[in-house]
Image (cartoon, rainbow over all chains, first blue to last red; front, side):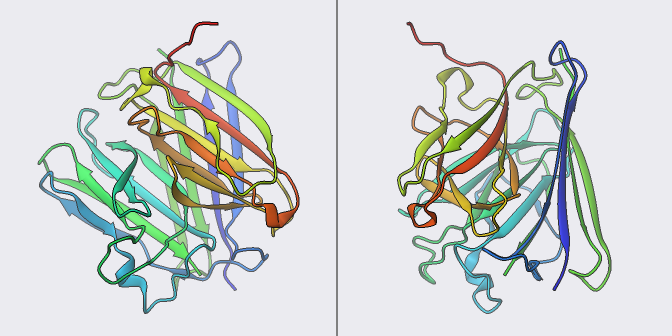
Length: 149
Length: 142
């Protein structure tokens, strides 16, 4: 059993009259248990140089690696760039096979979220793949990791 | 202009063959600028037991394709308890007790709400904390 923790700290000294400081640590466990998640994609990097939509996390690639759907998987994605003007749109395919935009990662931004990873077919039709679309053709590199069971 | 930062630290001594130690800090800016976000909301709610999505945070026209950031945490303590998080019906995943998430949120249209449910099979309610940092919201007349 592995022990993996994810800590977030949100801090601001001037967004309000009083400073904000919020910190939370989660120990990443398998669904409904206290046993740690023990599978991972490892830290990966992907560089994009066009505005085409590409699959960052293609669930077909995980079918032999026991990424079980509707469990406690987690995804971390970071835009390693520095541009505050260009972004990468991150979407998740919905049950109808269309992309539902989650949000836009500008240079330096990161996101961390639970991942249902619903896999339906090898034809991708309704898989909950994670797609990314750069706003600009300038080279941008994403760093990402999937931690799962 | 305010300066708000979000830092993540991912750590494990035994998930990989070598130590995993990843840390990243981002400053929360208005979209496409280096001007810090100046508006926020923080709340704690008890989500009723139900298999139907409810709106946790309502998408607002003033924030369409802006730079909102959302933090959500499941504050229950029983490891079996979870809430399901979706955007406009597209399920992101399950937040188990103690888990948190942090995402940029585009609010692409009025239907792109951040949704939650606490499954009926758990026969309990789920305490959820959330924070929204944003560029603005559309107010409706009383």
